[in-house]
Amino acid sequence: MPIRPAVLFCVFHLLLEAPAWATDTVVAIGASNTSGFGIGETAAYPARLEALLRGCGLDVRVVNAGIWFDTTNGMLGRIDRDVPDGTRAVILQPGGNDRRFFVSRKQRAANVEAMQARLAARRIPSLVYDPVFPPEAYQWDGIHLTAERHGIIAAELAPRVAGLLFPGRSRKDRGCGG
Image 1 (cartoon, rainbow, N blue to C red):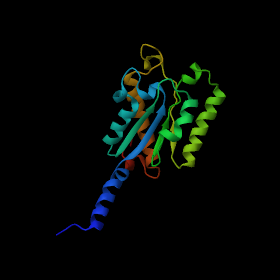
Image 2: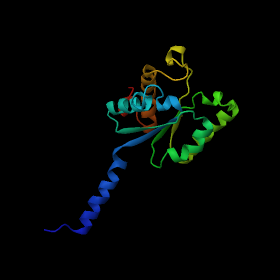
Image 3: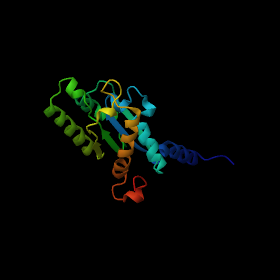
Image 4: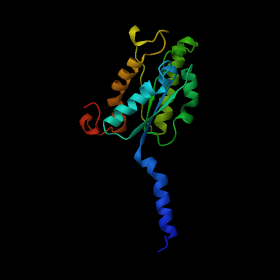
């Protein structure tokens, strides 16, 4: 019995759509610490966060959009390109390059606010992760975070990101951090 064209079209359509249904995408925007400078991308917090969220039973892909030497000016300039339609949540990690490359505190704050506003206009929730770290959190250069610290960041972010993905559910119901 021959396969009807309408059946083929439906199967083809379902196959094309399946990845969009199956995985929630989270994008981590930042500079060299987001990218995993000195430890590698697989040891950086975005990859470790993805592993933690998947371990909690969430079908999540965390995209590492960290670029060495980037400032909040650069992040703002690429936010629309690096956060594709369909992204479920964004982590903004402004980092310390603004100080190094003479971006004022006022401009930094305006850039972060503008990134959050652009994402909100697209109905993409975001969180800013910008803590002050103790000296032992850094590698030999005093700038880039250790692999251990990336693990700590992933653990801190897991329940917060799960909350962005599932805002109406309790911590226990959404799988992570409860």
